[in-house]
Amino acid sequence: MAISKRLSLKRRLRYRKAVAKRAEQLRERANRWQYEQNTLALVGLMTILWAGMERYLDEFINWHMALTHITENCEHPRALNRKLNYLKRRVENDFGFSDAEKETVRSLRLEIKRLSEFRHDLAHGIFVRRDRSKLVWSAQRLNIRRNKMTPQNREYSNDEIQQGVKDVDKLSRGVRQMAERYVPHLSTTRSAISS
Image 1 (cartoon, rainbow, N blue to C red):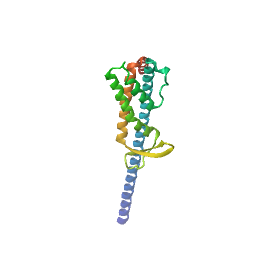
Image 2: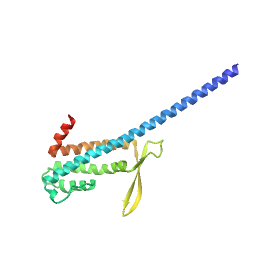
Image 3: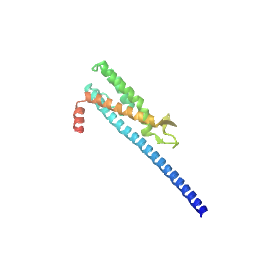
Image 4: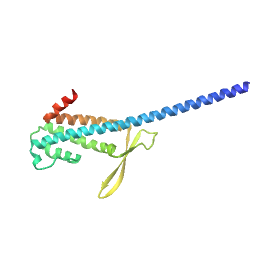
Protein backbone atom coordinates (compact mmCIF):
# COMPACT_ATOMS: atom_id res chain seq x y z
CA MET A 1 0.00 0.00 0.00
CA ALA A 2 2.80 2.42 0.82
CA ILE A 3 4.39 1.85 -2.61
CA SER A 4 1.12 2.57 -4.38
CA LYS A 5 0.66 5.78 -2.34
CA ARG A 6 4.19 6.91 -3.30
CA LEU A 7 3.50 6.18 -6.98
CA SER A 8 0.18 7.95 -6.78
CA LEU A 9 1.85 10.96 -5.10
CA LYS A 10 4.60 11.01 -7.78
CA ARG A 11 1.99 10.89 -10.53
CA ARG A 12 0.04 13.73 -8.96
CA LEU A 13 3.21 15.85 -8.64
CA ARG A 14 4.16 15.14 -12.28
CA TYR A 15 0.64 15.98 -13.35
CA ARG A 16 0.68 19.28 -11.40
CA LYS A 17 4.05 20.19 -12.89
CA ALA A 18 2.77 19.42 -16.38
CA VAL A 19 -0.38 21.50 -15.77
CA ALA A 20 1.69 24.41 -14.40
CA LYS A 21 4.06 24.23 -17.37
CA ARG A 22 1.14 24.21 -19.83
CA ALA A 23 -0.48 27.14 -18.03
CA GLU A 24 2.78 29.10 -18.30
CA GLN A 25 3.01 28.32 -22.02
CA LEU A 26 -0.54 29.55 -22.53
CA ARG A 27 0.21 32.76 -20.58
CA GLU A 28 3.30 33.37 -22.72
CA ARG A 29 1.29 32.79 -25.91
CA ALA A 30 -1.43 35.19 -24.72
CA ASN A 31 1.19 37.82 -23.82
CA ARG A 32 2.82 37.49 -27.25
CA TRP A 33 -0.55 37.79 -28.94
CA GLN A 34 -1.40 40.88 -26.88
CA TYR A 35 1.99 42.42 -27.68
CA GLU A 36 1.46 41.82 -31.40
CA GLN A 37 -2.04 43.29 -31.28
CA ASN A 38 -0.79 46.38 -29.42
CA THR A 39 2.00 46.92 -31.96
CA LEU A 40 -0.36 46.53 -34.90
CA ALA A 41 -2.77 48.97 -33.23
CA LEU A 42 0.13 51.47 -32.99
CA VAL A 43 0.76 51.05 -36.72
CA GLY A 44 -2.94 51.70 -37.38
CA LEU A 45 -2.90 54.78 -35.15
CA MET A 46 0.20 56.10 -36.90
CA THR A 47 -1.49 55.63 -40.28
CA ILE A 48 -4.59 57.56 -39.16
CA LEU A 49 -2.49 60.36 -37.62
CA TRP A 50 -0.42 60.64 -40.80
CA ALA A 51 -3.52 60.84 -43.00
CA GLY A 52 -4.87 63.67 -40.85
CA MET A 53 -1.54 65.47 -41.00
CA GLU A 54 -1.44 65.26 -44.80
CA ARG A 55 -5.04 66.48 -45.00
CA TYR A 56 -4.15 69.60 -43.01
CA LEU A 57 -1.01 70.04 -45.09
CA ASP A 58 -3.15 69.91 -48.25
CA GLU A 59 -5.52 72.50 -46.79
CA PHE A 60 -2.62 74.80 -45.96
CA ILE A 61 -1.02 74.44 -49.41
CA ASN A 62 -4.38 74.99 -51.11
CA TRP A 63 -4.93 78.15 -49.03
CA HIS A 64 -1.45 79.44 -49.89
CA MET A 65 -1.87 78.69 -53.59
CA ALA A 66 -5.19 80.56 -53.68
CA LEU A 67 -3.75 83.46 -51.68
CA THR A 68 -0.79 83.90 -54.00
CA HIS A 69 -2.75 83.05 -57.18
CA ILE A 70 -0.41 80.13 -57.94
CA THR A 71 -3.36 77.92 -58.89
CA GLU A 72 -3.44 79.54 -62.32
CA ASN A 73 0.12 78.40 -63.08
CA CYS A 74 0.38 74.97 -61.47
CA GLU A 75 -1.52 72.04 -60.05
CA HIS A 76 -1.84 71.20 -56.35
CA PRO A 77 0.99 68.79 -55.45
CA ARG A 78 -0.21 65.27 -54.67
CA ALA A 79 2.95 63.35 -53.79
CA LEU A 80 4.49 64.05 -50.40
CA ASN A 81 7.88 65.03 -51.88
CA ARG A 82 6.18 67.60 -54.10
CA LYS A 83 4.26 69.01 -51.14
CA LEU A 84 7.52 69.36 -49.22
CA ASN A 85 9.16 71.02 -52.23
CA TYR A 86 6.24 73.43 -52.43
CA LEU A 87 6.68 74.39 -48.79
CA LYS A 88 10.42 74.88 -49.29
CA ARG A 89 10.26 76.83 -52.56
CA ARG A 90 7.07 78.82 -52.12
CA VAL A 91 6.09 79.21 -48.47
CA GLU A 92 9.54 79.50 -46.90
CA ASN A 93 10.39 82.21 -49.44
CA ASP A 94 7.08 84.08 -49.17
CA PHE A 95 7.64 87.66 -47.99
CA GLY A 96 4.16 87.66 -46.43
CA PHE A 97 5.39 85.39 -43.63
CA SER A 98 7.56 86.52 -40.75
CA ASP A 99 10.90 84.81 -40.13
CA ALA A 100 9.37 82.97 -37.15
CA GLU A 101 6.50 81.69 -39.31
CA LYS A 102 8.91 80.57 -42.03
CA GLU A 103 10.98 78.76 -39.41
CA THR A 104 7.84 76.98 -38.16
CA VAL A 105 7.05 75.82 -41.70
CA ARG A 106 10.69 74.79 -42.21
CA SER A 107 10.87 72.77 -38.98
CA LEU A 108 7.56 71.02 -39.76
CA ARG A 109 8.76 70.26 -43.30
CA LEU A 110 12.00 68.74 -41.99
CA GLU A 111 10.12 66.68 -39.40
CA ILE A 112 7.72 65.37 -42.07
CA LYS A 113 10.71 64.38 -44.19
CA ARG A 114 12.42 62.67 -41.23
CA LEU A 115 9.33 60.64 -40.28
CA SER A 116 8.21 59.82 -43.82
CA GLU A 117 10.61 56.86 -44.15
CA PHE A 118 9.39 55.39 -40.85
CA ARG A 119 5.77 55.80 -41.92
CA HIS A 120 6.47 54.40 -45.37
CA ASP A 121 8.19 51.32 -43.93
CA LEU A 122 5.34 50.53 -41.55
CA ALA A 123 2.43 51.45 -43.83
CA HIS A 124 3.71 50.06 -47.14
CA GLY A 125 6.29 47.45 -46.20
CA ILE A 126 5.81 43.83 -45.28
CA PHE A 127 5.72 44.09 -41.50
CA VAL A 128 6.52 40.89 -39.61
CA ARG A 129 8.23 39.52 -36.51
CA ARG A 130 10.98 37.19 -37.66
CA ASP A 131 12.07 36.05 -34.21
CA ARG A 132 9.18 35.71 -31.78
CA SER A 133 11.53 35.66 -28.81
CA LYS A 134 12.61 39.27 -29.50
CA LEU A 135 10.58 42.45 -29.38
CA VAL A 136 11.75 43.42 -32.87
CA TRP A 137 9.74 43.84 -36.06
CA SER A 138 11.10 43.71 -39.58
CA ALA A 139 9.74 45.93 -42.33
CA GLN A 140 10.64 44.97 -45.87
CA ARG A 141 9.88 47.11 -48.88
CA LEU A 142 11.08 47.25 -52.44
CA ASN A 143 13.32 50.04 -53.66
CA ILE A 144 12.78 50.62 -57.34
CA ARG A 145 15.53 52.46 -59.18
CA ARG A 146 15.87 52.42 -62.97
CA ASN A 147 13.70 49.33 -63.39
CA LYS A 148 15.69 47.43 -60.78
CA MET A 149 13.91 46.21 -57.65
CA THR A 150 15.90 45.46 -54.52
CA PRO A 151 14.38 44.45 -51.20
CA GLN A 152 15.29 46.64 -48.26
CA ASN A 153 14.90 45.39 -44.69
CA ARG A 154 14.73 47.57 -41.62
CA GLU A 155 14.23 46.45 -38.07
CA TYR A 156 12.26 48.39 -35.50
CA SER A 157 12.14 47.65 -31.80
CA ASN A 158 8.90 48.08 -29.91
CA ASP A 159 10.34 51.21 -28.26
CA GLU A 160 11.24 52.69 -31.67
CA ILE A 161 7.72 52.06 -32.94
CA GLN A 162 6.18 53.66 -29.86
CA GLN A 163 8.49 56.68 -30.12
CA GLY A 164 7.83 56.99 -33.86
CA VAL A 165 4.07 57.05 -33.28
CA LYS A 166 4.50 59.70 -30.56
CA ASP A 167 6.57 61.77 -32.99
CA VAL A 168 3.93 61.42 -35.73
CA ASP A 169 1.25 62.47 -33.22
CA LYS A 170 3.24 65.58 -32.26
CA LEU A 171 3.89 66.38 -35.93
CA SER A 172 0.21 65.94 -36.79
CA ARG A 173 -0.78 68.38 -34.05
CA GLY A 174 1.82 70.89 -35.25
CA VAL A 175 0.65 70.79 -38.87
CA ARG A 176 -2.98 71.02 -37.73
CA GLN A 177 -2.22 74.10 -35.60
CA MET A 178 -0.38 75.74 -38.49
CA ALA A 179 -3.23 75.06 -40.91
CA GLU A 180 -5.89 76.23 -38.45
CA ARG A 181 -3.97 79.45 -37.90
CA TYR A 182 -4.12 80.41 -41.58
CA VAL A 183 -6.99 78.55 -43.25
CA PRO A 184 -10.21 80.31 -42.17
CA HIS A 185 -12.71 77.44 -42.45
CA LEU A 186 -10.59 74.94 -40.47
CA SER A 187 -10.99 76.56 -37.05
CA THR A 188 -14.80 76.57 -37.40
CA THR A 189 -14.83 73.00 -38.76
CA ARG A 190 -12.78 71.73 -35.82
CA SER A 191 -14.97 73.41 -33.21
CA ALA A 192 -18.08 71.93 -34.86
CA ILE A 193 -16.53 68.45 -34.83
CA SER A 194 -15.36 68.59 -31.22
CA SER A 195 -18.69 69.82 -29.84
